[in-house]
Image 1 (cartoon, helix red, strand yellow):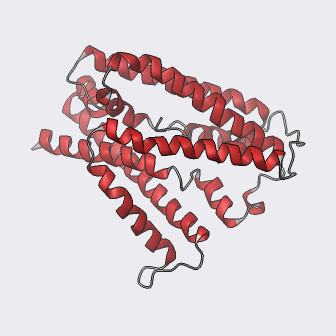
Image 2 (cartoon, helix red, strand yellow):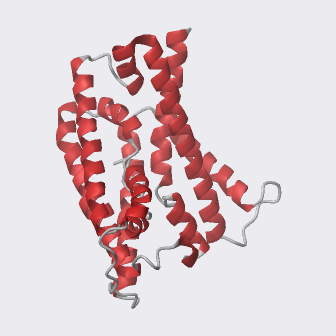
Image 3 (cartoon, rainbow, N blue to C red):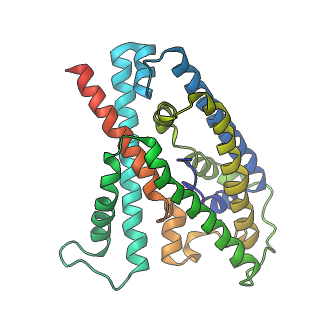
Length: 278
């Protein structure tokens, strides 16, 4: 579940931007990404030599298509991984405000530290081993959801806000944040080829999407919107730590999960591209 948690902290803000009816957009985006995930499986089943997105591009458009797909996908993965490292540095520097690195400074020092911690996991080429590391991301999502529910039910914040039915001006923001929750498609082929029983992919994928949409993203969005409503979801009302996490759509507890997978795919694809064009 590499996409789980990517946008969990931004869902309430997305819902506040678009209104209750924007949940339909979340469902449409989740359904579309699920369907395209099944199409990826069908493409890979037709030809055993297809093991990645660039291979699909090669099958459809030749070497030029493969090069374009590889370049586009790797730029996306690189930027996402870089964004998460920056997020790690921002959040950790706020969690430990008195900790500093003499040469680099607090934020840059934490970024380098996190990168060094994550780096050994990128050397693992077996997704079965990485799946145990990924389990911490699922646990982090559950902890965050439980913490938000606790804050609303026990810490007297309550769920009294009604919200708006629809806010047309905020629909573009809602769409972009909802789409970010399901941006892990580049790692789907790697996950599929790493499965011991690949025939189970079509059964696992719907369970993952149902779990992420209904139990995590949907509940988090509804609860957060009921707690704070539209007028309180402006980022300026949040403490700096939560504002950074809210806007940058991540969590320091689960960023490493996507970083592992993106770096693995990135290194594999760069190697394959060099091999094919040499």
